[in-house]
Length: 293
Length: 285
Image (cartoon, rainbow over all chains, first blue to last red):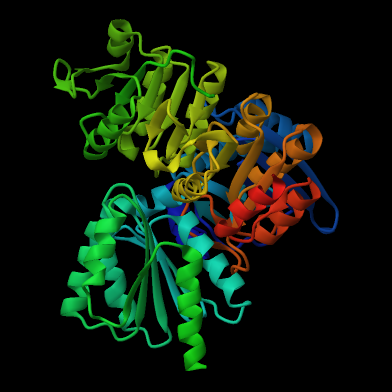
């Protein structure tokens, strides 16, 4: 989750920093903390610009120990590398350690602070960009990207792609792309957490049936926790209460598939189809959409 | 593969809803589950296996040498550190939503103690007819010579089952997990498959986000002698959006198209979507 400037500002204020305009700095530096996923380490990068010629810049970096955190000697090393005046080292190291503390406490993935240095060595943060670990953001900062076990990304096509695993949904979207020669595209990416599958299915159907731009709904569930039969029953129950106003294609795989097939075979709803292969379900979808074209 | 020869498995979180569900399935499969751990439930039994309050007690009483961690996210990093402290060298962590900073610490400690950590947010692994560890559907695997590795657990199950139905058996199905910071990497698993005499070819299932597939591709190009079929899920997606998994973020440098180019250059044959994989394998025969 990339926080907006206002969110970043308010987050930093919780840790005693202020973000404010900076006039007449003698220098600027970019203080950047970032988790590198390949090396699985946190890195500090500092880039310094001197006024009045901000085109010249100097950079240095430090690897931060995951258990020990950013140490004072490392910040002294940065100050030394970049040629900070001795009088400014103390304020820089205190600043750096406080920033790192807030970085780890908010579970940020990246934190970029633009800092002005005044002639009396005061440091002023004048811009901030923070990317927060979404798992933490959801509970602590109340940013709502995931609700009720549903992860939703709106897209601009015609086919709602729903599944109980991100990889499954991505593969459906790729199959649609290949089967329709890129003519038809996903209306959305919608992943339902396996642990909340049955309620999530009803919630997703309710929302998607009301979306005019969504022409077909494809649901792809690989059932290991709940059986295919439970999914089929829930979809059938939903369709009984809320008539399906567009084609809903169900691709099921996993435990109790035969039972699910038997349950759905008894349905007389022409807008409800079941298949076992993703390719087959996408062929159904493409045929349906081509009728509309 | 990944596991010690004589695995004795302890399940952390055995009395939780999912812990119970998956433990029963693992026992049914014949997986050597010897104990469970749930703090405050020591002295109880589940499916004829003793439950302990701590991992150390479970290790001392049952000689457990592998742990499957299925505890909720807020307690998971503590559970992982407890397992490492108890001397267990192989851990499979199913838990999703563990904060990244916590995992940085756990992965560091695991490396220091030479612990193999599969996950977090993994579906586990299946060695057909031998061991099922995690949430993988037992029917997805059948004995054969193909090693399958994936980030996504459901995609791994789906591909495994599809291969099994067309009699393309596997040596192992391994999900490394879909979180930004994981223990075992795609490259690590490829290295295992390369050195495993029973594995003759490999299927690699990647997705958008992160650099794992690039690192794996470098290994394939430089060191792998066995043929690899690859698939990267998530073509043509808009940039800077997260698609489900914490690590599946479409960003420049990590798109499906870029990864596919990289894998192609490493000699990997690419399936555009899942159902092309069996045909690519059959064409190889």
